[in-house]
Image 1: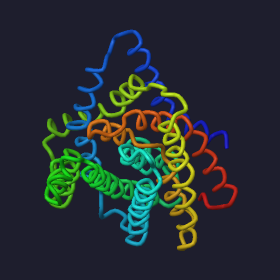
Image 2 (image 1 turned 180 degrees about the vertical axis):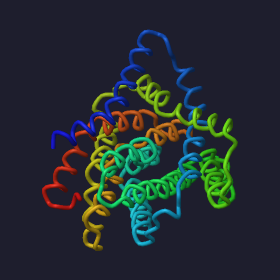
Image 3 (image 1 turned 180 degrees about the horizontal axis):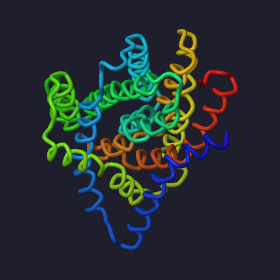
Image 4 (image 1 turned 90 degrees about the vertical axis):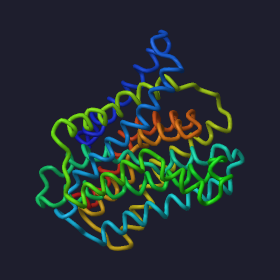
Length: 320
């Protein structure tokens, strides 16, 4: 159990340290609100589309293709998103915070935390196809998570709503992250490759996401007290770290998944909130307080929750 805790801590603690650096820089007056706003724009319009494009463009869709496994993970993410969105609309009094709450509760750190965790778990697995299978699932779920979030934010955008279905569609189509997803799919489908100089540049821009976003998260952290918004933060953290993975495990087990497949499903659903999810809601008019707080808490607590889930799986014989 100790080795898995160290593994989880090594992946998540750098995020926390970067956020603490953001807090320090903000308090010392090194950065301010203008820096945070401008940085969010750089990340949203350039860095996230670049990293999404890179992940999807480089995914080898032919290496391991288990249709049933991918369909289950895709269907589960969409179902969990819809149920969470419906519940938030029905029970939350502050309707302006619905999109931020949902975005924080179901978006997993698929592109940043997912791949290294899967690599550490399965790099030496007896079956060489396990790791590529997990990475492929990450790529597919990355597309779905950004697509569903784009739809939700467009629906909750008063300007897009005022223009009807066409306005919502255009809001989604103009989303730079959606453009990055589509471009990645096109390049992957046709087997196109970027020139070395362009590929290096795109990768470098994509690498801005982790450091810059977490510094902005730290700089943006403000405790509002134990008010309604803090309640939403706590509920969102519980949904992300416990309800989402536990329900996914139960359903997957009942459907018939075992061993490495069940372990991958557990990991994909037990990840902390995505860094890109915070940036997305901050840039699209969401509640940055909820996003920053949930991101910080899930990054901190996921080292413990992931370790707990991995330990339980090993004891029960599911981890192979």
